[in-house]
Image (cartoon, rainbow, N blue to C red; front, side):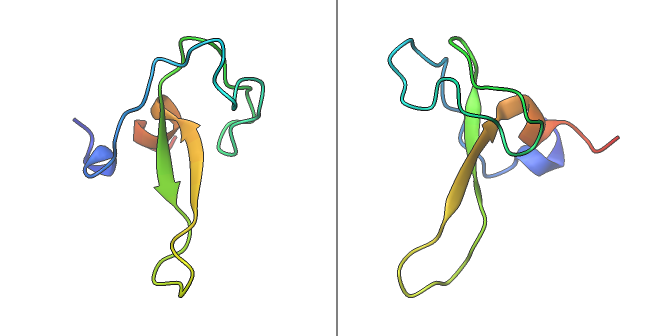
Amino acid sequence: MPACSVGLTKYGPKEPLSPSIGELCPKCGRPFEVGDYTTLIRTTRGSRHGDKNIEVHWDCATKPPE
């Protein structure tokens, strides 16, 4: 398991009624599709109003940088 995936939760596979189907992954720009696995990446930490997360493809979050 790549070190960057430690602490991430793998969600999926996406089903046809998932609200994020068709939205673009902020890491790769490809749309989320039925059958995709995703995870949430924290973009803020320690906010008074809670942390903010973004959804990305599992592979986008766990592949080593090229």
